[in-house]
Image: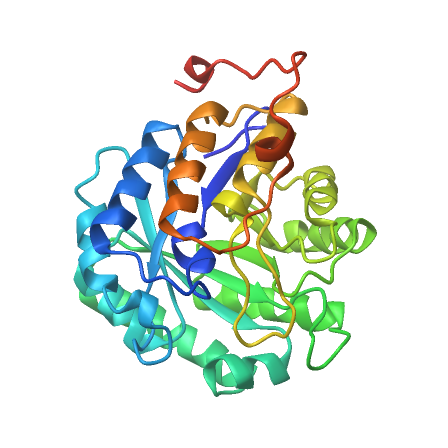
Length: 313
């Protein structure tokens, strides 16, 4: 829950950040990462993805990690799923929140999950029905990937994105995430589209997922803030990228995103020093991986005054 003077940063490093790295982290390492993020004040974490392990071996331990995450006090754990089977596995693991994703670009959706965007939209309706039939209390979020452009198809029509948002809301989405999967977005485009999405979503929570592929990730956060968005996905150290989109490099950096939001006078409740310490640990676990971040490079300015964490209590 956010207000006009708060902002939420959701850590997606354990999912998006890890899906392309060479080193397979152990479940114990992943859960230690979760616990330390929670201790730092970052409690919303996408802990894994329920995809076939032969496609992304990093997530062969998805069930174990999901169940372990549920035992961490204060952690609000979620998982990403691409289809009904993945959702059913997430339900069985006991996760309280599941994120579903489809692509506004039909070409990207075919490459990513081997089905058309329309077929993926129909699958989401089946996921909602399966959740309802199970009687489980699971929040279902839905994300629209490649919402600002696609490395395969090029331009993505704004009307296509808005129609997908309407379809997902009608099917029962309880949260909407708009994603710049390949780092094509610019601030003017973000501001315009997110105002329209926000009008469609009404009281349904809204989030943005940006990549910093071309250096505009944090500028796009500002544009989304202008449009009323207060929830953002980010990855520690800027890890991440889409394996089915050429040159789609990392997510916006968690440390830099927190710094930006706090500098804009928004409460995040996240301790930047603790994030920087966890980043150092993660870098030791993942030798040779490209980490990004201005705060890690230059440090915090002496003039920086973060909001007290107690203000969120």
